[in-house]
Length: 110
Ligand SMILES: [Ca+2]
Image (cartoon, rainbow, N blue to C red; front, top):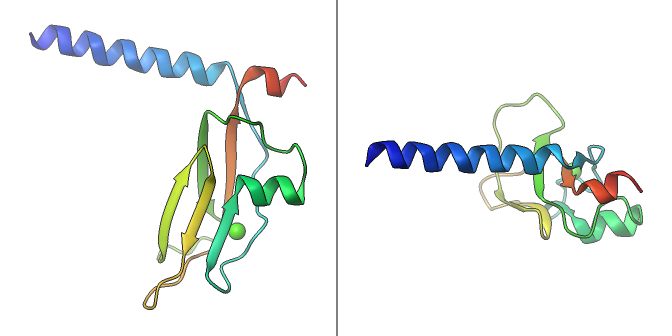
């Protein structure tokens, strides 16, 4: 039984790796800063600032703070469908983040 579980996990990991190899990441993107309500790096905001800079259906999203500061506050939500948001709270503020998206190979070649 344990052997079957290991085989299944290995198969899923290989599948994900192959999917990623088929695409490419965009540049690191940063269209907002954390002043006001927070840092809102959404796909809609990005495409407004730079049309067609993000593919229609990203496969994945990565985000990182632009500074080396280790303490990060706010409430972070990130997904490849809408993008990234960090919302300031009464007690903790967001860092400035940048994001990039993994896009399908068809987008990379265009
Ligand atoms: Ca930002």
